[in-house]
Length: 182
Image (cartoon, rainbow, N blue to C red; front, side, top):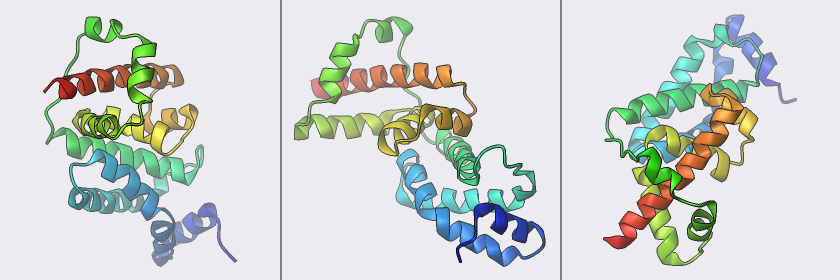
């Protein structure tokens, strides 16, 4: 019989700490998949993922069940990965005027172009995004999390997530354009 996350958490909090291994096994691939898309390297992602589970274990008593354990764990992963990578990566900034000048049609055309060159530019541009923007793209477009869950994970409001995703799409377009020109 497979135990629910709630049952396992209760066991861990009751002193049966070895049950936490089940949660690590259950979620380590998903957490690593998120973190590796934010981090600078797979090695960094492994270290960050390890840190995520240590933090989750230390703070398990704070898990109150208002969200799923997976969402709570993703939030720890998101915050840990953002903090770790923010220190290493300079941020590229765009003015509000630059972002406002780009139409949704231009963005859709650029991002929906399936040519190898466009896909390569997209991957390069993704790697240039600030960690928090990269995390939003990962959660929404690559892992298909609903916006309401992304809001819970990131601590943003639903409307803020929508706005940030829109702005991030514009940043991707500008980065791809710059890369294409060089």
